[in-house]
Length: 212
Image (cartoon, rainbow, N blue to C red; front, side):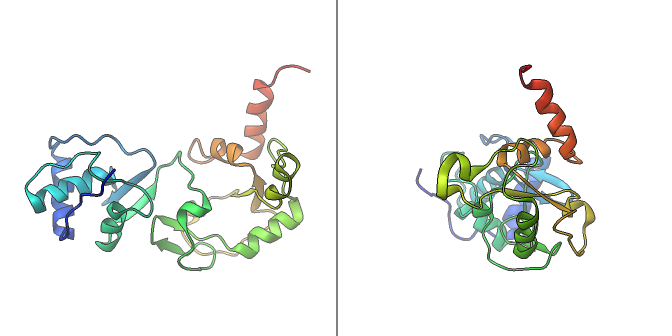
């Protein structure tokens, strides 16, 4: 897919595009899959916002195949440079390598670089793993046991109380506030808001497993 976005897209163009979306302007962009533009409490598909803004610059219509959306694309760079917040959808959990580590912050400090997120303290993660180990506390999956050395030390760390719900910096207890979970169980935990408890996901697994 060739990138065909023009230069000169301003915040004014993007705001005008959002206004068009609010008034059900015709376009060929679909719903966003993983990310939204958050503006004044409302969510918009990033490619739709940028595509409609590009149309205002060039006068020609843009469609979903004219440019890419997602982390590290020109589309998202335009939104970030014009000070728009890009947030992950509630049922989408970006991997650490998708988010990046442009800045380091204490627990709970808001970062608005690629997405609005709450920075995780790497030392707290290490202490959590040192106490609980690298096996998923829901299903017991062990990456090292299955994949060998390449899986050594790999596991997601789940915040039992979501930092996004606290909305302020606080001191994390790596033993009581954090738990290791595999990506699959982590995704299920966040299938609702507030997230499922560890015990609830364990119960879901027990009900779906065949009797011994």
